[in-house]
Length: 410
Image 1: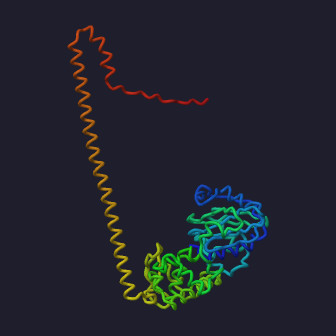
Image 2: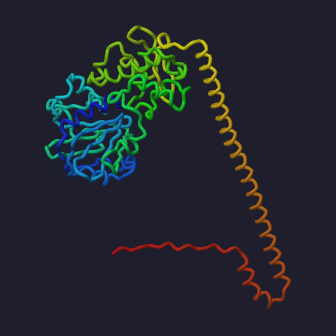
Image 3: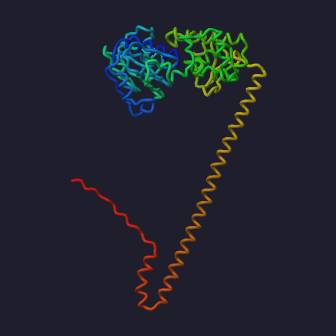
């Protein structure tokens, strides 16, 4: 998933080719599949907010990226990359980051979109690829001749059009916390933010993923910060002492700045957990040959090293109690759901039996009435038989005959 470093890569790339230019055309190759991702606008209004407006700069806060426009029209287009979004520019010279050409081609041919290696192209690479690339959801043409594609394999990206030239004061940006790359607070301010945090007993992994506290940290960055700090993902925020809080503050700053300044995930320090965690939850080893295990914390798969990120005996006991209680609650909820389903099915069966009995009884009653009516008719004189015959027939159920309408086209 694109996190703060990947979005910052995209911002720098777009700034090189979009600053002080105009977007002349916007197209949507997959408009139907993308329509639900426009939050407070439509694809048409979003495109109108881009076309023929001069772009001054590309801005970012956390995982959000937006275009700063020159004109006084209060409309700001905002992008969120979701799980796999990213930008590609055709024939863009590699002036922002140095890339290994073989690695880029391998990534591109395997169609792994939205990764930091996929943001920059050059002429040699474009000769081997079709354009626009697969999974293109939005395409821009600029006044200086550049062709830019927004690609998104899983289509979880989001697009906003804010009626303001100051988007940081509007939703969704106004609810975000500080950006650790742009404005990392001092330790004293960081401490004040933690003391005012609404849930002091929150688990550290969940705490780092909270965008209202710190914007831009995602799953792999949170795991890396905890790994560098020697903190277990399930350790509670209110159990940290002053030295540990200083360590957390230091490593948030260190991991974010190192990841952004590296320019590529393959240039992250070799001892980082990042290089060893992508095993689809299978146990593996880190740089120091220590076992990496996986757990679901904060709704995300968390990689950690138990020998390095240890809990105290009391903390481990509390974690075991919470997990056991959670499992009991989940089991009870599942049993209640199954009982409700079984009870509903049994009630439906009983209702079906009752309805069948009602139908049988009504059929018997109707037959008895018909038999009784026929017997009464037979007892009447022949002259009255003819006069009552129509009434007897009209009392019987009549079958409605529906006419089929046929339209003829000449």
